[in-house]
Image 1 (cartoon, helix red, strand yellow):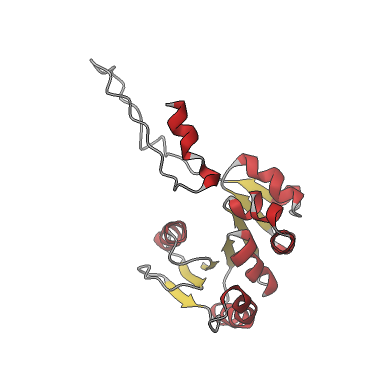
Image 2 (cartoon, helix red, strand yellow):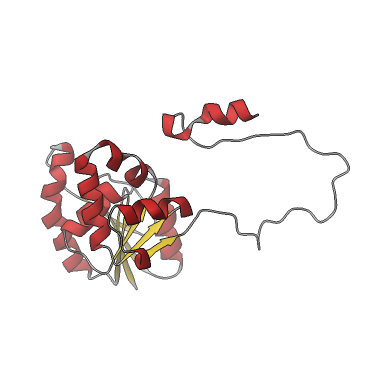
Length: 195
């Protein structure tokens, strides 16, 4: 199987997806605006000609050409308003688009352009995945067909990680860990207040 990810190659999420699929024996390619090394994965840097986000439009033919050369069995674009739109504009199929959060929960509410980009990407997708159930309503509101939407939350493999069967003699000290950055959307102060 050949998979083409249209996603930020420097993102840990892209790397994890690409490595997991590589480990199944798939031939994995990543089309990205940023270069990164992912062992056993072909990373292709898309041109923007130094034009920033406007350069995305110039990347469409390059992405289409790459897909014609690779002939992927599936294209998986991650982050709706950028790489999702890019894959949709290049008319790549079959197309899975994954929403990560701000791309469907915040940006489309702040900008008509982002709303339009999201709508185009979600409408073109053969399948839309989200990382949490509460995001499904947002992608449907933006144009995804409800039957095409599926939440695939992050989690823990409970077959590999289980709490100990025997009770501990003394409870460990309480530790609270937040792995989010300090952006307002993550409201780390709420976690601190709760503690």
